[in-house]
Length: 391
Ligand SMILES: *Cc1c(COP(=O)(O)O)cnc(C)c1O
Image (cartoon, rainbow, N blue to C red; front, side, top):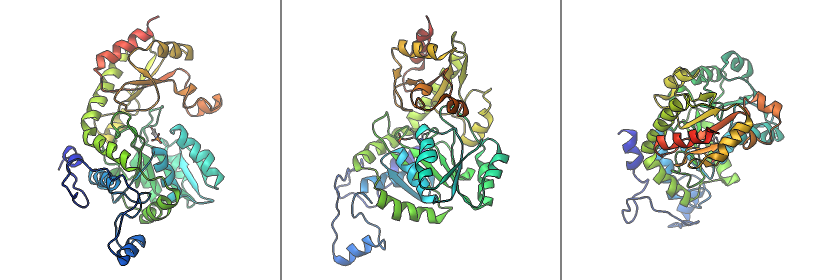
C-alpha cells in the first residue's frame, strides 16, 4: 500500500466492539481484567494490554500503530508535546558524564534543554557545525550518548549530511537522533539515511491546523536498549504520555496529512519564488530554491518537496516590525504548519531572551522574518506580504 492508503487503512490492534470506522476515544483511566493472573501478566509486561492510561490507551496505541505502519519503525511512542518526545528520547540515551554532540542550530527549547536542563544532570553538550563531517568525527567518542540534530534547522534552514553523520556515529557505536518536524515522515525515509531514532513535534503537520500539542518517538530498533528505557522506565516514571482526545485529533490529522502537506509545500515553493522579486525583501531563504546552498542535499535526502517554512530578510529589525504590523491576512503567531499562514520575528520572540552574541553564534538575525505557509491561495498570501512591505 502507498502511504496515502496506509494513513487511513491501518487496522486496529483489536477490532472495535461496534465496528466504528473512525477511531473511538477511550476517554478512561483504568482497564479491567478478567482474572488476577491476566492482571499480573499485563502489569509485569508478559502480556500487552492497556492497564492505566498514563502507560497505555487504545486510542493512543492506534495512532502509534498508524505511524509505525507509515515509517516501518519497530516502536512508536506518543507524548503530550514535541518537547516531551525530545526530552524522553534524550533521557533514554544520556547519563551523567556522557555528552550529546549537536549544533547551535536548534529549536530554542531543545537548545535550552540540552545546554541547561541536561547539563544540571551532568550531561555535557558538545556544540559543533554538523555540516562539517570532520568536526563531527572529532567530537564523537566513547562517551558520546548520541548525535542529535534537526533535519532542516529552524530558522536557519540548514541541512546536514545524515548518512555521513550516521556512518561516523555508528562506527563508534553511537546512535543518531533526528528531529524531523519540518519534513514529515510520509515524505522521506530517515531510517534509510541511517537515523536510529526520529523525534517529531506532531503539534505541527500532523495535528492538522494547530489543534493540539503532541510528540512522537519513532524508534527503528537499531539500538534495542533504547526502547526498553523509553517504554518501561521513562514513559512510566516521567508521565508524559499522549492523552486520548489528542490522539483522536492527531489521527484525523494524520489521515489528511499528505494532501495538506503537498498543498502547503507547493504554496511555499510558489511563494519563495514570487517573494524574490518584491522590493524591500533582501533575500529569501528556502531549501526548495535551486540556488539554495542545501538544495541538492535536501533533494537527495528528503525528495522533491522542501517543507512549508521559509524566511525573508529585510533591511533592519525596524523594517521587520513595520511589515509584521501591516499584515492583514497573515497572522502574527508562532507555530509551524498551521492551516493559516503565520509570521514571526524569531530574534525578538523565540530567541528574545538570548544575548546578541549568542544569537550571532546561532545565526539568528535581527533582519529575519519566518513564515509558515498555510493552505490559503498563495496569491492571497503574496498580496498581503507585498502590501505590508509598501511604505
Ligand atoms: C515546535 C517544535 C518542537 C517542540 O514541539 P512542541 O510540540 O511545541 O513541544 C521541537 N522541534 C521543532 C523543530 C519544532 O518546530
